[in-house]
Length: 98
Image (cartoon, rainbow, N blue to C red; front, top):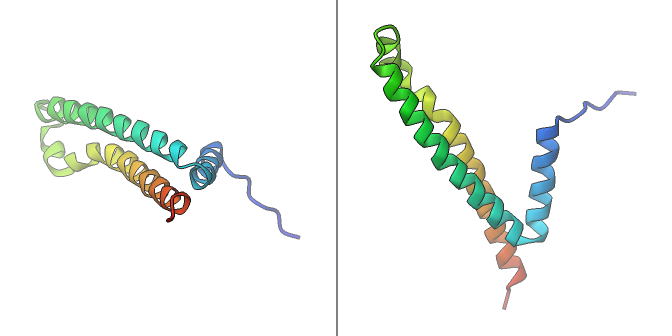
């Protein structure tokens, strides 16, 4: 018999939030709004770090080549926010059919 891999805590939280969003659209809307706020906050941080690194004499050349890496975290968080927004919209439409 094969053993089932244990899920990480973040996967469990994501599964629970996804399940709750299917049941209650309000939870998905709140989670999406909070994630979008965090995305804007991390985008501000990424721009600040990009500016600091690009003016550095040691990191300047590498930042011009690999500077897009700073913006991966805000984009990933925004993707999760969009996921929960779409999921909450679908749940809202299921709940409010005419």
